[in-house]
Amino acid sequence: MVKEVSVLIAGEAGQGIDSSGRHIGEFFNEQGLYSFVYKDYGSVIRGGHTFSVIKASENEVLAHERDVDVVIALNAESLEHFKDLKKNGILICADNCKDVKGFRTIKIPFSDIEKKFGKIFLNSACIIALLTVMNYDVNDYLKLLTKRHKENAEVSKFISDYVEKNYSGMIESKKLKTSKKGEVVYGNDAIAMGMAAAGLERYYAYPMTPATGILHYLAAHQKEFGLALQPENEISVINMALGSAYAGKISAVGTSGGGFDLMHEALSFAGTAEIPLLVINSQRSSSSTGLPTYSGQADLLSSIYAGHGEFPKIVVAPSTTEEAYELSAEALKLAWKFQIQSILLSDKNLSESAKTTKFSKVDRIKLNFAKGAQRYKFSKDGISPLIIPGVKDVTSKITSYEHDEFGYSSEDGPMAMQMQEKRAKKRDAIIAEMKKLETVKTYGNGKIAVIAWGSAVNPFREALKYSKDLKIIQPVYLEPFPTEKIIKELKTAKAVFVPEYNSTGQLSEILKREGIWKDDFVQMLKCDGRPFNPKQAAIGVIK
Image (cartoon, rainbow, N blue to C red):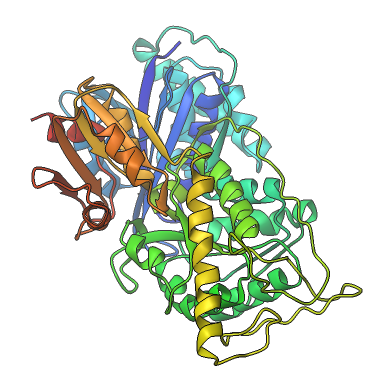
């Protein structure tokens, strides 16, 4: 049994790098290893350099390493990745590539494969070569391929024979297969599955990387939950969702930063109208179009303070596929319980990476619609009866204006004060509810504390493998912020680091606002769109 292996497969967009990475991850998962798949690609349809890194281990894997055991290079440009190879690592490349000193090279007859089977089978040929050398049963890999079974089987036989003939001395001992630890799931799929499990009925989105995968998944599974629809732009997206929610349908929308900006006005309307909604913002790097296929965490403050005026909301940030599943369900449930807007912050690193995942059960939302006409009836906790249109003995009136308990517009000063205080009460009710929830997670017991959120948590959790001096503190809920719990976890810390994928330290700003920040806290800011490297992360905080 392999204890741990990292594979980097690279080529140009259109050579099947994405699907290859997924299949390699799924293969190792089928062998009983934990898998993690990271993909790096530019914002082009075809051409341009792209690669995937797959790490498999006997232990759970949360992030990839840049130093790998195997590099599969499908074109000349991809040979640059030999610098990422560990000493005595394996380079799999075309038969005309040069041997690189210090590494083992397997040269694949690309021209023969193209003539016999076609260029599209180069990726399969290289993967089969690797699995043959590692002495796995390649038939297990072929079972994962959903297309061209006959051709892939022929390529497999050709390459297996070729490797056994030319590289017999490199073939390792036979590998044992153990039971699976879970399924390989992408972050976007986990978000979609979590919402559906909680009772989602309507999903609206305009395609925007890296959130598009949620729409793709739900569009393919509409019969299981309801309706997934792509309107003409993000303004239409949120307004249609609010219409569905007003009619009593559990609704959500998904986008990235630029699309989220377009939704702000409707968010404010939803705040005043008290229409429940889950908004998923999968962050990309930089402002404007930025780096559209790379990751960032620069939308935190934008999400917390989204919209004009004042109204309560919830902001959550999962770090793993398991959390993505659970929190999408939980945030959807809380939106309807408090008749507010929940925002789930994902990012490219989470949304478009995959890992071995085992889901826990989530509760399904149960709605109780009320009768009457006082849609905005005053209450102790600010939560009014949930009244929807189309029901006998019901009058359901909503408005974007300030209003009275029946939803009629009002510019009366005392009424305006009462209604704004009513909505503000919900925040206190939310904070009380949060005491029942896991709003902060911790990993490790070291004296060096790392406060991280979202996908930035994972490289530091992996860094625990290199240093036991660390304690990772993860605020899962970012609004309302779990201040007391964070302070409690910091009591024994001798040093505190705050890593983020932005250039200004937005979590640091919240820590300052909450009175947690101290002068000796250290920011670790990274805004190039790429994730922290676990080994370098460990070195960075320990030194």
